[in-house]
Amino acid sequence: MPIRTATLSRQLRKNGQRLHLAMASRTFSQGAEKPPAPREEELRAERSALKAAQQERRAAAVLPKPKAVKVVKEAKAPKAAKAPKAAKPPKEAKVATQKAKPSRADKQTKKAENLEAAKKADRKSAKT
Image (tube, rainbow, N blue to C red):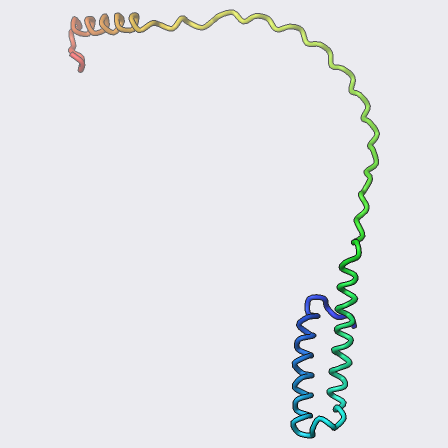
């Protein structure tokens, strides 16, 4: 089973702690002259495998990474040219149909005339 890259250093640290605990308990209870227990030998083998895997990864990290191949797109066939449209006849000039806008002076005179007419009328308006 492959070892995950993200947990390799953490696995090494945990393995080292377990190995140290196993070695310390053996030396405390039985003495340093006794041969290591099978559990201790198993932890040593696992530690050496972890260190070898770590060395392999460090060596692989130095090597150049393979680069992705650039995708070459095929050129599309050019579209057929459209037939030119028929020319439209020129538009006729518009005749000026707008009324001339009254000036301010014209508005004032018309307003004054309306006011005079209202004063002379039989019925009084609200303005007078």
